[in-house]
Image (tube, rainbow, N blue to C red):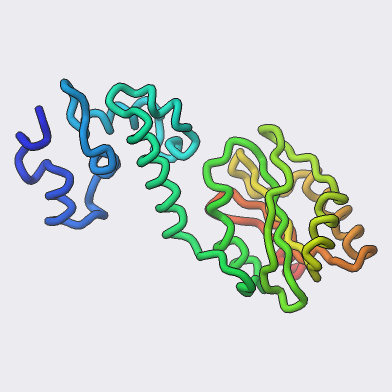
Length: 225
């Protein structure tokens, strides 16, 4: 059945207008983004098919254009629209990253950068470079590791810090498993980086582990003990 043949109470756009966007199902929302289905399948049915195949709505963030385009009724244009909508949603719900923004505690850091780590299947390490007032100068993803670990090279981190004339560095990386507990390798790597920073004169102000939603801060933990 085509969407126009459905009662208003089942049409996603009408449901949004009458009941609010928060009351729409995942299939309704994706159906609105898709706009149309195929000759034999309406947009809602197509949306349900896609969501059933990917297994979880969060998995859409890990699917590329080619994989989405392989669904009958999607194609490149709709795949691009879906991925753009996902990225736009991430940016709307997270604190905007702006030059010279203050990052003087772990909460502000995580709110600003957590969207960079959501739903990642590999471990990623980002270095955040601050001035002497703990305001943002720049940030850069330096390493993307295997599924379970990242190899950290202090030389690369401090070379970037020197290039930006940074006064301090915050290291942030994710655990694809979702666990926030520091591994033995995390503890050793953080200790080595802090020692190197003290020698060079550009301290590591914090090392943050995230799963894209929650976080663990070495600095907060040390100050609490």
